[in-house]
Length: 433
Ligand SMILES: *[C@@H]1O[C@H](CO)[C@@H](O)[C@H](O)[C@H]1NC(C)=O
Ligand SMILES: *[C@@H]1O[C@H](CO)[C@@H](O)[C@H](O)[C@H]1NC(C)=O
Ligand SMILES: *[C@@H]1O[C@H](CO)[C@@H](O)[C@H](O)[C@H]1NC(C)=O
Ligand SMILES: *[C@@H]1O[C@H](CO)[C@@H](O)[C@H](O)[C@H]1NC(C)=O
Ligand SMILES: [Fe+2]
Image (tube, rainbow, N blue to C red; front, top):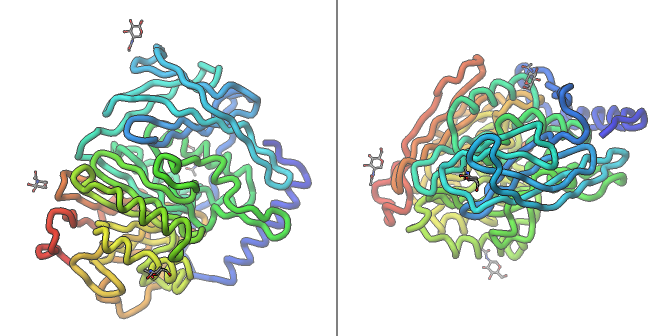
């Protein structure tokens, strides 16, 4: 993971290139905070596990992912008491090259079966110097889902993460744009270290945004190299053949993780997978059905208006989600918060999904603060501030959504709403729109 001189030249070029793009599409955003770089702590060496994060696999397993600089075993030891590792499992190791950068050894081990709502202690590789722990979610409702998109790694990201860490959430959902490494691969490592204190304790379930594509003209024509190598999500288990879209179930919620930056049109692999996945949803088992996507299908901000990933993807897939009675669609991409009423095909609709944009994690590009006026009728609440969301799914019929603004460094609940599952009222007679 060394940064060579040639690499720095490339990094400078990449920075100028992306900076140029950002200037062309100018949003006049208020001050972003400085980039935070998290170096490898002094007490860790090249065989120490770093950038540890975990993700749900099926009903009772967890994937443990971490990186070492040296070749070390892909092995996890774990148990329910600190220092006592009664179980162990092995997995696989991969690495990737991006121009002159060569990644560390990326290890993935799936452990389980695990008991619900239980704290497990674990060590990665052959190194018992660092002990981590996580808590599995409950097998039944209620559950608290933390939600934040466009996270990045700035001073604002730090406050967002601090607030999320103190919320006692069960599972993190991230609708794309993670590190903002933007071709400069060591920044993926820095991001991994920044989120480790949270992502090693609770499952982080992510889908991709435009900043994950990292296709570079001529020099690196493959997409999602780093993202796919570092953030392996449980796509195989949901019948998908791509890490770019998948679904999973947790405590009575079926979650669709859709991919904005891969084919989504009628007849595409993602479309066919989504159709098949929705056909398998059993609302008796998972009364709540939610979706995450990066580019918002509804948006009254000037930022990112009219992009294909928003307009064409909505046209292609909204019908499927509407027929399946998806309760909420979360998006990122626009660096602000916005909540819509239940909507379908651009109009208020009692049987439609609530749409929420939560792209305000704190990345270096700053906020998108220009809105189209007058406010469209379907937009209920909109504000350009950093923050995160929490969805407490209380029971089969009711869930409480809150948006926690942290522009003032304190988490303030600035928007909240009770939502009712579309499952409990098939004719949508009592649905607020
Ligand atoms: C771990 O295994 C030991 C020996 O079999 C057993 O006595 C102990 O109860 C186990 N601990 C846990 C936490 O399961
Ligand atoms: C942000 O958090 C990281 C990791 O905890 C820390 O190294 C860094 O100093 C923090 N930076 C700021 C500006 O708060
Ligand atoms: C998708 O394509 C098929 C075959 O061309 C067509 O029959 C169907 O109506 C299309 N569905 C939508 C939602 O456009
Ligand atoms: C579900 O939770 C809501 C909010 O707390 C409550 O009003 C309602 O009675 C609960 N429903 C059931 C079936 O327990
Ligand atoms: Fe984005």
